[in-house]
Image (cartoon, rainbow, N blue to C red):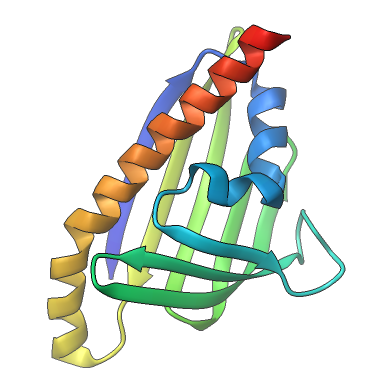
Length: 149
């Protein structure tokens, strides 16, 4: 299983960062390579919400249905895959004065035994690069929005 964790400090209060990340409409605006994050039911955020997700990692298209399994306002949003590409991830939010330390963690596993492990090794640099860029884009969007208020 691969694991990637990335942390950034965003010059925006934790409640603003949390609200932006918690709104599924925003997810494809900052997550690089993510082409789909659509609700599958009536629950649109918080514990129990499910989303049909698709991301591109190089030549691979990875699809899943994920469920939000951990949710605590201004602290944590975590999910687990229920079908498709296996992934468990979370956003962790830590208040630092008027700023927010934001950590994104993703654990993932490709199917297929040895072939899946080889695929994982090939995809990990691409996934990491996409996630690093995603954090940069998210920070920029949040800091720009803050400047307009």
